[in-house]
Image (tube, rainbow, N blue to C red; front, side):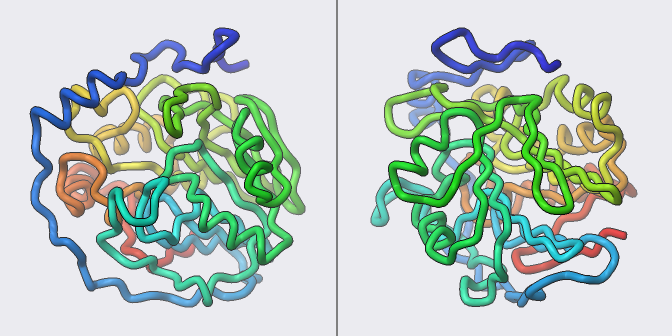
Length: 309
């Protein structure tokens, strides 16, 4: 069993520093300035994924940010989808995308399952989820407390999981696993859970970390499931460290997580599309390349894919 992470009212990170509070956020915004980045970078070469991937192996396409399309054995799974212009409750204000999605909406194949890691706006994007629900036939898998929001917006069938619980899908099982993060939309914090996911089939083990700080949960996951064939690890939104370190890994920490998991291959997520921390939009990618050295840890551009044998 994973450690206790609920005190009867709110969820929390066990054996780890807790997320910074509102006063810390004000201090961050008042005392630092983000590194300059272009307002928009026109370098994305969109790709068209196959409708179904029937070949052997796993096709992994980075759409943008933490949105990844996983295709194998005829199944299509999408993580934390966002096609919106902004990561915000409002369409006219808030962090704006710096790059286009790497797969256009019209070219997105049928989606069998959508994995949502937590309720922050850059991971739970209601306009995108409404569009997915309108297409039909997608199962939404969410952490504890998140299904209520989806039901209120008439979005699909949502199955809630706590850490250590699982949901069966055709050809695989989705396991909900710990992440060190926090939740909040509006004034309510930590009333719903945050998580990562392990996707387990007879042939393959895939770990999607969601949003997370560095911590002992990587060892817990390795001990429980073994070494993943593929780990999707976040590398962005890490500056300033005094504020971000409890909830977001720096690129060199993602490399440490890769090593602890003993992942056969890793792909970087949570970078290159929105500037949500103080580091410039492409600093995480460059820092990871310098830190990973000869490890099998790939940085994909929006629209690029990797075939994992």
